[in-house]
Image: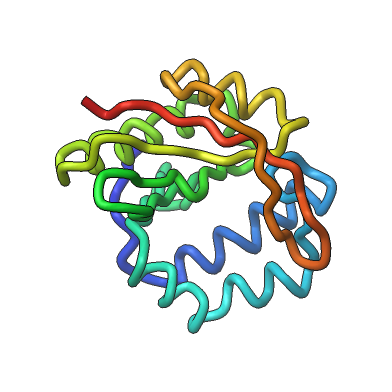
Length: 160
């Protein structure tokens, strides 16, 4: 498995559609998503915007994109892990860990001091995953997710 920065918006678009299709709208990490929202998020325009403001990584096995992660700058010393998704059939193989490790390493190398992440409060597997990576719960927050508000847990860790 290899993890590289995303250079082709099409790879990310195909991956997003495949990940959502396999997981379904009720899946953890896809709260508030719908076919229409995923279609919009995987458009060339939307992905080009993401690639301009975030560092985006793709994990590939045999040339197939099987995982995605991204981070963005929040303030002068704070970044946010803004997305981590692994295809359903590839979970449990260390792909999410490789993606998070790359994001943490690159943010630290770029001189940032902290990284935060948000996930649904009821997403126990994600919360446990982030805690294993040294993220500590800080506070509850609400996020817009389509037409609804989602209660999330904000976690944070030092990069130094």
